[in-house]
Length: 346
Image 1 (cartoon, rainbow, N blue to C red):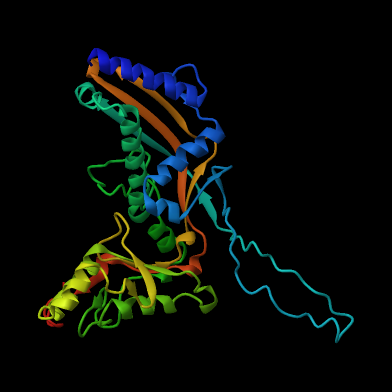
Image 2 (cartoon, helix red, strand yellow; image 1 turned 90 degrees about the vertical axis):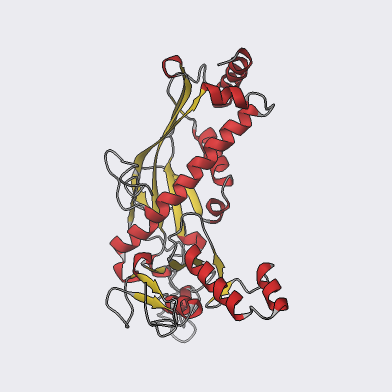
């Protein structure tokens, strides 16, 4: 790398070492808990979705939920005044489930070639650009694995599993494993299919979302949201365009996104890497990402043999669904739509 780049890199390493409270970044070390929390807070802040769900550090590699949730009502009367033998009884407000979480070792290892560093060195905020780039990449991977992870392989294969299916067990897979009835794979029209459109199981997305809501107990239908895949959302918007093709004023409302962004009465969101034909109803607080406290290891080294800087990070982490009664979704691979009014489905 160029002299100026080398000087900036040395300054960056010195600054990071000072922040972490270590002598050198070239030696692998364990990150102190207070710094560790700040490190992940910065990762979560780089993507909005991770600020909306539960994120926490946990003490143990294997344990139980750390968030509270009320399983039922806590208000009533014991009738002490009517019967002196009665006693008032408290109820557990925490509502912690007995299901366990299990963290798996996760490695986030990246490198930056010298020639790219030379190009970036012209920017005065070189260090921030680099760190922000890495943080966002890690954050997006967390989301991707959350939707697509099915298992935690001893050795992962990004070529065979481009959506990182083998890195960890994501939210969908946890529901399939622990509450399979909430992972809906077919409707009534055709075995193995969920048809959305004219003549299908659901005429439109509103009906589909409404039906998913019914799978959740009424007393738990608080702060629910619908997450809808990009293809389904785009298809629905295309239908609005077609319907309003000869009404310029209505067309402009669609373009300005003034159409109601709700389905089935729920606020609706598009989230990165969510399955294109997926539909999920839950609360953001019901989705959790845990990192085991004290498990973060890191070091950065300059590798002249390959003319690049290598950045190694590792942690133990996992995904968790806090309340399995407060989630329901359609298996995206089974969702079929029609383009010709119900004659063909694909």
